[in-house]
Image 1 (cartoon, helix red, strand yellow):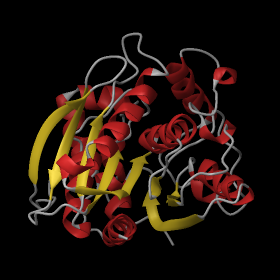
Image 2 (cartoon, rainbow, N blue to C red):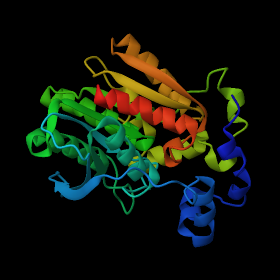
Image 3 (tube, rainbow, N blue to C red):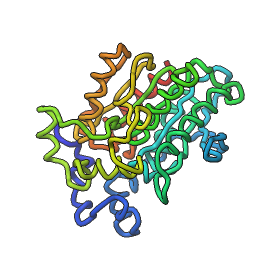
Length: 315
């Protein structure tokens, strides 16, 4: 289907913006980006009981934000969530972080723990964000009783770079602790240091995406090298999970944006998971661009994606 009208009707707002970093740093262009992402006219997300604390980590405490449903309990499902932002942007307050957490909390009746991993700025590189993510998931698992959650019903997920971090962390916990979560939920993520070429069905769709929203090879190379602190060849299987041994991974659900360069990575990774005997489900979110969880739930494909995520977490 065509790119959703909620996006195409606002493409003009992106004109003249060279990059998201520059656009978000300027109040004028930031307002245009917010309008493009439908943030300015978004309905309020569901309420939740919210508190913040810290998980101990090898690089210092890792800030986490905990969203609790109104129902008390000792056996509630839990969802550890990682926002995206190319490993160098994003925070707990961005819609993809806060709104998604609130929606899953409400729809699944789950305790959601959003992780404020360290960004790759100011000399920070892998494995710091990876270590932060491992530490946060381990803290949730080890404090299940205090959080009122069932340790057998912990799912982990992330969007874009957050999905990469979530996957790498689960692989590390499989290897170091002999433990994996109930499920791994990945939205429009990338698992390869170099994104594979698009499939014949994807390639023509990419021509319809504005340049600001593309992930061309030079863009992806810059993101990868900034994350790794060096060349893509340095990536091990925890930094770029496509390089990992995948046998023994928990069930994986991939939500791919129909119009997204990074969809090629997720599609190839799904094949790798299947070959490794991992239970994998791949869902194409029609009409959506990369980052659709930054849109509000009143947009039908976003609503449907959130419902699917909540069903996985609740089950």
